[in-house]
Length: 233
Image (cartoon, rainbow, N blue to C red; front, side):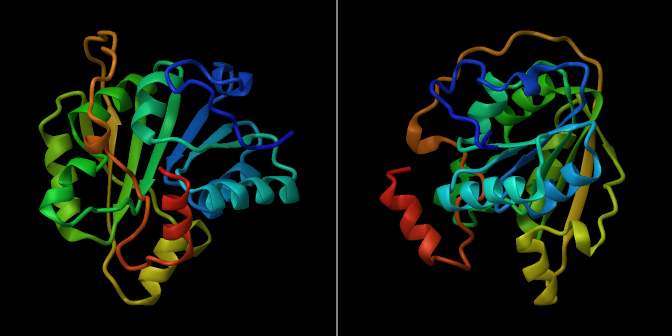
């Protein structure tokens, strides 16, 4: 069975029963790339389900190939925006960890509406994290790091905690590259707290204003950039 979960309707539950098995913990990585981080965790933790969310088709295919090669039945990937994934597709208050490592910072002001972190995503994130579950975040972009800090500081449903320690074997592809360039890495984590649990209203957001997490880093506009736009995404 392929690790790739087909998405027929981004507002309806996925055809992947393992993600909705509440007896097994769930961890989710946004912008999972080729799966270096997540497939490594899946191999070490067979009693947990892992979901990668990635927009770029080539990266999704590489992730699926790694799962086949490693024989990972507990690792899955889907090609979709993170905002839709969290708003509509995941079980409520089940994810114990969500990882967002090195998302696109969209540094130009005119592109800030594409940034992932904001009230819409935090609403959906809190709805999917178990109480006590954590969001782990890392970036090489200092300005965006402070923006994300401010987002969480303004939301009483989250409490800041110490980020996880990750050795080189748990660095993502981008992190390995950035650390090799000597760039500083900024990391933080937040824990979901108990709060009023209102249902999420349907998304009403213009396509041009949708958050886009880690589509392409500004440093690399190569083959994957051309493939992404050839697909019309």
